[in-house]
Each structure stands twice: as structure tokens, then as C-alpha cells.
Image (tube, rainbow, N blue to C red):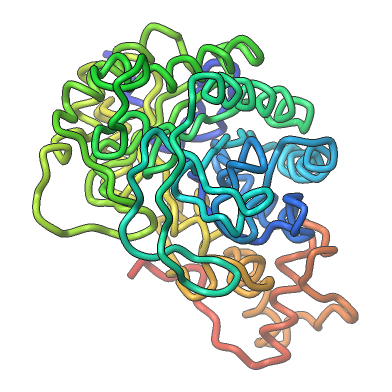
Length: 420
């Protein structure tokens, strides 16, 4: 009888070699420079988490028009490529595998982020309800300007060009962001797409932008380096569809024909970065089990997983890997913690988006916690003149963290403690 895979076994997703099946999913951290280059601390942030089997970058926009918030990175020019090359080099130095998530926010943007203050684009003139974040605070979303057919083809080309830049920047592949109410998802779901041309109406038409984008990116990278992320059940940013099972059944069937590196599914119960416990909606049936029946390729599932559930999901064959979002923010060595079944720290929400290195570089590894215990016991002495910042070398950051905590007399977890 074949041995069942475990969460900690290596696996190949197309051309992507994963050391384990624990995935760091894309998480917006809003710390890019004003020109769209990754911030100075981005290199260490991702290197700290390189023990994930697969590191998926935060969403990286494919054009200036794709920007939808403060501190969002891009991948449309040589400066961006050079900045991300430093990040991928740091991840590869730790034997990690990293892909770039390619993103266009569409109607989820605001004129304050658009070139010359233009109106954001979308499939149809349907705005998102509520408020969005800008540099001046929270303001209402605006009614988007519908894209014309020529502009849609330009955006497809921008995704392909960004994929080319991703390879230049040293990424091992790319993930196309077709989830969470951003541009491609806006075209998919009929709450946002009211078009009557070849990109609207039938599920085949509404899926056309996604499929054209996937095919264009495959033409640059090869299918073995392409993943796609979808979130059928999420109502984030007003997303709903009148027949989600028909829509996403078609989407999955088309993606299955293309021999992708992986399909990345956001499980029901997650809206953006929040857990969701509101009333059931029809798309809540579209979970990893539903997807597995329709997709025989590599399947990553993210959303609401804890250790035991993830172990079972992989062993049962329902998924091939599991994404842990917020847990990766607060536990940079999460695979080690899961393997040892030790405590998992909780991420601090006020530091999720923007800000300085607090809540970004300063979560400890088990090695850092042990180093602090050794300092407190007097077994070792503090290392002088070593701070934790963007310039800290990866092999010293756990020492720098312990030094800072020791100096401030902060409490420390016991690395051998059981999970709480």
C-alpha cells in the first residue's frame, strides 16, 4: 500500500521544488517604497520565512493603474526588478522557493492612487460599497470606468510582462491573483460584471479575462511555473455570483487543461484577512473537497487551517499543500513549530498594514526564544552592537531579537512548551 504523504514531505509542483507542503500565502503588508519598490526590510522579512515549502509574495501589481492602496509594490520596471532580486536571492540563500503573486486591483483602487488622479477601471460601472483606505484616511469607493476591449488586451499584456520581470527578478514562478474581489475576480462574478460583450454574460465570457491572462503568462514562463488563486466563497469587496458552482466549475475545468504548477483555493469562511461566520451562501459549498473532485492537479488550500486539520487534509489527498496566513506573520519558522507541535504565537493586527519593522521583522523563531532564555539564565552574554533592522544578516537576526528583548526585560515563551 502506498505511503500517504505528510504535511512535512517534499513535493514538486511543476518546476517548483517544495521542501515541505506548508505554504506561506500572499499577504499584503503595505511596506513598499513610494516608487513601488520593495521596502528595505522586505529582504529579511521573506528570508525569515523561507523554510515554508513555498513562499508566495504579497500581491505585486502589474502596472501603475493596478495600484489600489498605500505601500503596494510593483513589478513593471527595472527598479522593481532589482529590488525584488535582492529578496529572492535572500530566500534562495535559505534554500527557499518563492513565486510572485501578480495583481491588478481594478475597481478596488481610488483616484488618489491612479496616474493623474484618473478613475479606477473595472468590468462595469458598479462600485464597491463602504470605504477604502487612502493616505488621507478612509473614503468611499468610486464608480469605476468600464474597460474597453483594447484596454483589456493591454492588461493581459501587462500580466505577461510582469511575469517576464518576475523571472528576471529571480522568482521561481508566478501566481495569478484571481481572488478577493480584485480585477480578474470582478470579471468572473456577475455582481460586478454586467457587460454584454465577449467578456460578459455567460460564464465562458466572464472567465475569458482569466483564461487569456493565464495563457499569456504561460507563454512567458511555461505552465509548470504558473499558479492561480481563486476565492469562490469570499464576499470581500461585494463579490457574489448568481451561480457560483457553474462559474467556478467551468473555471476549474479550464485551468485543469493547462497543466499548471498549482491551483490555490481560499476555503469558505475567510473574507480578506478575516474569519467569516455570517449566514451561509451558495458558494460556501466550494471548498477543497469540491475542487478536488474537479481538479486532479496540485491543489493548495488556505483559510482556517490549524495543524491537525492540515495534517489530515494532506494525508487524505484532498489537498497537496496548505497555506497558513496569519500564523506565518507571527511565526517565521512555522514549519519547525508545526513539526515539533509546539506553541504558535498570535499575530498582532494593528501592525498588519504599513508602519515600521514592528510586527514585521520582530516576531521570534524558536531559536531566538531559546537564545533569550540562555541570556536570561546567564549561560551566554549579549552580543554587543547588534540591532534588529533591515541590515541585519539572516543568520544573526535571532540573536539580535534576543538581545533587544533581554535589554527590555520582555517575557519569553518556552520553546519546548506545548501549543495553546
